[in-house]
Structure formats: structure tokens, C-alpha cells
Length: 325
Image 1: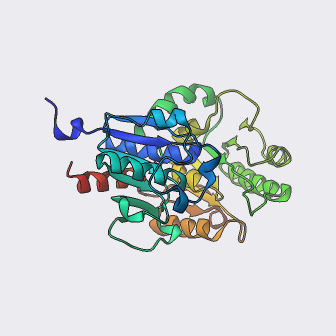
Image 2: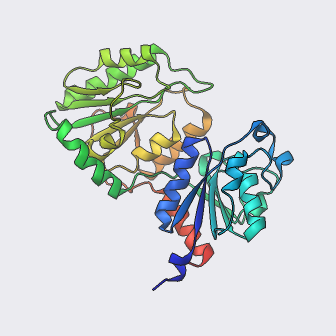
Image 3: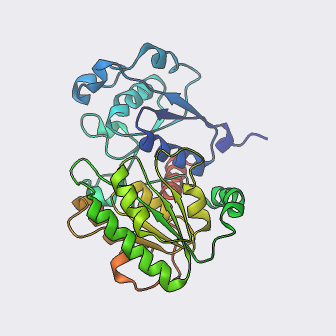
């Protein structure tokens, strides 16, 4: 028997912003409807302001345009400003329900049936605005269970507790000096030594090779290091699944929110003045909700009861309610 819910069709608009696409997929997966990923590639006109692109396909490469054809979806999920003209064009073809993650800006904001905006962005309230904490993601209990089965045998020889350290790095306006990396490594080493556990470290493309070496030098054995660019399987989701405590740098909204979906206690490392104001507002909201604590405020890794951060689930529930599913 085909129910009204299962008969609905969804499209996810996926452009070259990997983080945005991941957020959309997280919502689509939480919603549970069948969905197709529609790849959106831009030509040089894709850089034009949305006021000039309008509700149309200006700036979209021909190959991507060809994929935007019947059968039309009932629902479109997209993220970021550049996908907004495409989503609005689709609505004009078929009347689809439009969901946008993050404010698409002007013009055409009213074309969207639901706009999910992070509270730390301080978007002006509206009838189609859903304020969320953090960002949607794809870290689910099911995925963590699967990753745990893959990675547990690789870590089993390391003494517990396992302290995962997830490091971002420099952003457009905030550098990540070697001295800061060394300070983070020293702080984690002290806490790991106090508990008799092991450190599991993973870095990102924004960390920097000198900063990676400073971290490695500060972290004693026993440890597991996965430095960006070294190749091999990335243990990131294995860390989230299996760690007894998670330390995450506060420069990435996604990393902080994904960590807060894991079962272990989460500690955010963000020295005063290092992160942007909106990131600091996110950290404050996570601390207030009790889903994370600042690393500087703890002397040991102690568990506490806390909810799982699930913005994707919150958005999916809002879609169900507004679409009458």
C-alpha cells in the first residue's frame, strides 16, 4: 500500500559547497522520503548576485539544467544563497514545497515555504523562518553503530578512556598559529595523563602541517594520529562513535554540532577572541543547553546527562507538519 507520505518525491540540490550538501542530505535522511540528488554546477554567471539571477537557471551549466526536468518533485531541499534561484525556478514549474537551509537572502525569500536558520545567525523572524540550534548533519545513532563496528578493532589495543581530538584550524579571518596548536596539544595531554587514557587525533585541511607537527609533539603515547593528507581511511566518524570524551575546536559549526550528536561528553576548545562572534554565540547556546562544555572549564572528563543535538530531525519534523505528512 502506498501512503501519502511514501508517494511524495523530494529533490536535494547539491552544488560545490560540500558542507551545504551534507546539511541537506541530513534533513532528507531524517525525513525518510525517497529523494534524488540533483547536481548543480555553475558557469561564470553563477557568481552574479541573486537579484540579477532571479528565479531562473542563469549561471547554471547546461548539463545541470538538463537534470531539472519532469517528473517534478513535491519537495525541494537546498542550502546556501547560490541555489536559491534554482529552487525558486523549480517552484514556478511545479509548485514544489521549498525548504532552504540558511537564509537565502533577497530577493524571493517569501518563495520559500520553510527557511531553517541557525539561531547564532540572528535572522529576522518570519512566518516561514524556523530557528535551529547549530546546523543539520548526518550523524545518526545508526551511522555511529555502523562506524563503531568498523573502527573498534583498530583501537582495541589502546587503553581507555579514549579521548578524541577533532581539529579544524585557520579560517578566512582567524589564523591558527603554531603556538595555539601546541597549547591545545598540551592541554589535552594533561587531561589524558590524568585519566590514564589514549588520545585519538584527526586534523583537517585547515590545520596546517606545522600545526599538525606541534600537536603531534605535544601528545604522548599511547595515541592514534590521523593527520590530514597522510592518506588512508578517515577515522572521524569512528572517533565520534567510540570516544569516551571528545575535544573539538570551535572554528567549525559542523564539527561542533556533529560532536554534540555523539554519545560522549563534548568539550569545545576556543580561546577568547579566536573564533568569529557567531561561532561564540553558538558555543554559548550549546553550553546553555548542556550538550557541551568549554574545555577550559574542566579538570577531567566526566559524563553528564545531555540530549543529542539533532537539527536535521527538528527541520524534518517541521516539514512533516507544514506539508501535512
